[in-house]
Image (cartoon, rainbow over all chains, first blue to last red; front, side, top):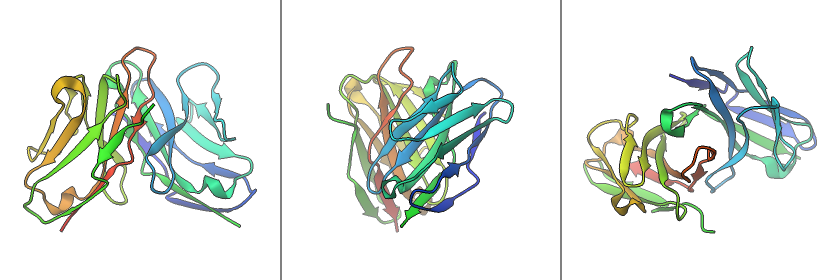
Length: 115
Length: 115
């Protein structure tokens, strides 16, 4: 079985400051890694994903995440946040082979960007 | 292209009543998933359809939950009779068929409150 841990339930940060949202996972098999974002009153949207290849993946809106196999982590970072980044962020994994691509999620991190 | 839609957006019912949630996936997506988020906890997998067949229903909490996907298009999730612990947000997601189609597209969710 897989599990995902997001230790920070809430992260307040000032606009233009850097932010890191932490994600650690546990799995006995190889997994794909995802970050999803949920803006207020909307559904979950895929932010970025790691399938293979370069361990650093980027999104179109300036977020990046780095897969660290030895530390079983996939932390999400942004060097300078904007008010519009206020949302809840979910880290998730799915097994590479079999499993039907079902996702195992963490408990989510609420990012609140303040002026 | 229309996204995943869910109906209703909110439902408030009393314990013991029946509720049916509906999900319309993106047209042509063979894979359909149901997830649930109980307040303050992680988003949990309920089940996975491939077309009209249940591929994996390992996450269904008990036999009060019945999911169907007749004709392989939209899906319904019925809770009968509803209990207090069934309250939460129910998400539906869809994914196209194929080995390189790992991204699930989520709907906005149905918020269910059982009083």
